[in-house]
Length: 241
Image: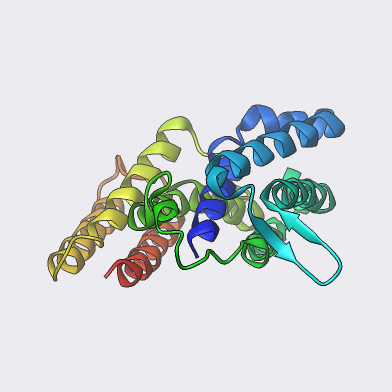
């Protein structure tokens, strides 16, 4: 699974952290240029995050063999084509953008899972590449509860509540709240569970009974964000311990 966690890290970087509003606008105004730019960034992230593995065989059949470079290029190409097919990528499917977002993200992550190579038993030094196995799990989980869930909540709000894109404060304060919630669950022993649920309970109470709502601006964002932090926090904790 070593290479898969690196591929997932690259996917989250390229599809969320480095996929800003300018790239989104470019996809809508000049689709060919927008998808070319996004595909190039996706390829670069995949290549950098799997650099030590690119010269070994990834896909081997009776008729052909593909090394990491060829596989990463095909993954980036298929990702760009999937984005072009998925009109929810530019929010053109009112009422079902959220469902399509989840479906296509699942497909794209499954493509990474199918393509990654199984490392030989003697390849121990490669396991320390980039962030190391355990830290990479934490980073991937952090990106899921911040950027991935931010997009998911926005699409839910847009599809069902006619909500607008969150403001800078709403977006980043909410992401920080979920990140802290997620990281508290990773503390060793029973402290993680106690502090995690205490943080979540305080935030929900504060958002409900304080009119200023410094932590968040909507009950939807608090409830969905808190649920996601609990799910990803406990899942990552089980993988770590």
